[in-house]
Image (cartoon, rainbow, N blue to C red):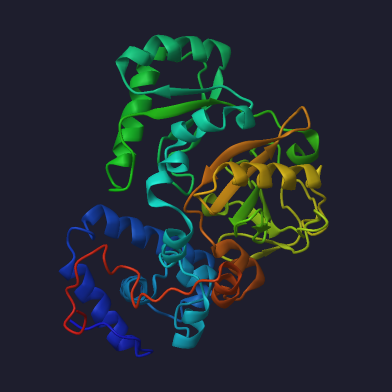
Amino acid sequence: MTLYASEDEAYQIRTGHEIVTAYPELYNPWTIQDIKHKLEACAQSRPDLTGGRSIEDIFAIATYDYWQYGIGPTEEFYHEQLGASHEKKRQYITFRERFNYIDYLNKEEDMHLLRNKWHAYQLLKEAYRREVLLLEGERDFPAFETFCHRHPSFVLKPIGLGMSMGVRKVEVGDADLHTLFNELFAETEALNSHFSSAIRGGMLVEEVIEQGEEMAILHPASVNSVRMHTINLGEGDIRLWYPFIRVGLGGNFISSASTGGIIACINAGTGMVETTGFDKLAKTIDVHPNTHFKIKGIKIPRWRKLCDKAFELAERLPTLRYIGWDFVYDKDGEWIVMEGNENAEISSPQLIFHRGMREEFEQLIGYKSTKKYWWQGKYPSRFENIE
């Protein structure tokens, strides 16, 4: 089995199937089914990008692209990489290759400060402005019970999973609280079991954020947010990397693009949304289909205050030089932290502007990755042509 850059799809398909066979510890039945399910959803939404290929062939090509370039399965569609040239693929910061830059910018031993959502809350509690409770086991049930009396609706979050996985709004209603407590633990542990990077042993329940009207009216059912990527270049020089708004869609509670929300870039100087909206498959959305707001031209309230808050928090974590902050505008007119991400994806601006930003990002941070493959040092090589 060999691995090299090639635009020959027959080679890509053959190599993709060989990789799956060679790495059974990574491609277990659950993982394969999950990837294919995502690809099927993408293909149904963007049949124009499949080129008549079967899901089996798309899966094999996506597997090859993942190991050769670090392209995530859904990036095949929302960056239109399926069948793209080698040159185009190299222009993008891919799902996996972003970790090369994160490893350079962020100190590994300090990543837990944000990776573990409970550690982040303890460190930045005043910036959250809401109650968050850690549940680790049966001994925490009394605290959960009283929490539910104060907050009959709350947000459930695994301690350490990204891309909004496992995050949902819970309505207590007339549920038996002890049964609900056990069900939430079982649900979280079942999800964690599929990911080796998951932080096990507990979950968070959070008070639901009551949003300020200016942001809530965009889609009242979701917690609409602003993603602020801060890059600390040292000596007080902190930059914003293409901030963007995230608005929910179709009554969904979560607003992130990975779960079906709308994203659009914000002009960092004016605080105005300067692009049309896009969904996770790069489909254009000019007007919100539910609330009928025109996406381009939305004004972010108290923009300068939000920028100052992002810069202030970035300064407090000098060893984490690249952070993706999610901020929510609350009912008191304050920008509060929903969460900070130490390994935030860089793909959304590339999706919005339909271009790769590898060179631009490398020039900004003053670093160019020298690794031939993102997975070297993480997984053993089972390829003939790689040492």
